[in-house]
Amino acid sequence: MFKKTKFLMDTVVTITVISNSEQEANIAIDKAFLEIEKIEKLTNIFSKNSEINNLNRYAGLKRLKVSDTLYNIIELSLNISQMTQGAFDITIGSITSLYDYYKKIKPDEDTIKKRLKLVNYKDIILDKNNKTVFLKNKGMTIDLGGIAKGYAADKAVESLKENNIKSGLVAIAGDIKSFGLKPNNKPWKIGIRDPRSKNKEDLLTAIDLTDMSISTSGNYERFFISEGKRYHHIISPFTGLPASECQSVTIIAKDCYLTDSLATGIFVIGPKNGLKLLEDMGYEGIIIDKDGKLFITQGLKKKLEL
Amino acid sequence: MNFKSIFENSKPLDYFIFIFLIIFSLFGILITRQIKTDNSNVYIEVDGKLIYILPINKDKKILVKGALGLTEIEIKNKMVRIVDSPCKNKNCVKQGWINKGTIICLPNRVIVRVGNDNKHKIDGFTG
Image (cartoon, rainbow over all chains, first blue to last red; front, side):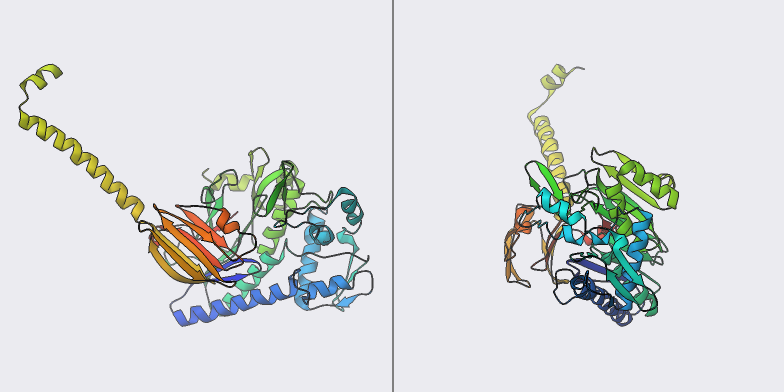
């Protein structure tokens, strides 16, 4: 078992692979890291030269031809937006950019009200044949923070497989994709943290995964407290304010882009309707609401020991 | 035979053996406790590379060079903390002392983890 850690996408990325050859493992891991770096470069909203910011600059002006990768990510994002009826929406960028969690800055109501007009995934116009994207209104801003990590984990696993790795684990912070089995023929074991515990190491449960992905969105990752209210990084596209119904949402599905974005979307939707949506779509998940109550999909209930 | 008669019939050597047994068993508890906690190591990684494995039961101060500059780490009384860091947000310093778990300083690319690698049953964490 070979393992390497790198700091990418503003977080800690760990790649673990099973291989008989250390050299083969190292080459495969380095190539997978390169894949993640490529996606980071395209999607990094904090870098002026990223492709996504270039696209944002053309909002309301003209349609722009984009790379296949960026086109693909935006297309997948819109699918999730439709699935969640707008609870996951990458056009939230004009509002997320108003919050600063280090400096404890939040926007005032009027600004939020104005900017909310710029939040609507239906105003992203795609042209599949020409691979162009048009953002209808000036000031519209795409923020791929809710899907890019999961997408990158998918691509990193693809790259590992192309390089002859039969089994491994890619973890971009809490967005994790597994494939194959460990040397003892057992699945990968992923610990789900308990958001209700102050100790970061306390687990809610651990779950066995193989050829599946898992992601968690929590209100305790990036936040500040102001006037007794918690301002965290999962902003509702409907209100422009931090979504307040949940503490954490964990989703399990095949693709990591989906678990990543759906965890955000369900967090916004809230526990009851969120659970129903998961059951209807056939995905598994655990939702912890603001009072600490657990909502678990039927399929997962059978597997878990809580 | 009741308690009173036990004490009345005891000789000094009996008392000695009795006290010895108590001390001996307490000692045993202490030793096993030591072994249990002292198994932990402090793992310090900079930019993805493991650069220190230190026992948590030996007090020590270390400076490591990260992406922005020097991070000062202190091990004391079986706890570890980041004393000072060149990062802006100082989240790592604010986290304070830990005896299990992880302190991550993203800006300076420093990870301080307390644990025992042999016991690692979990392959990844989400949440």
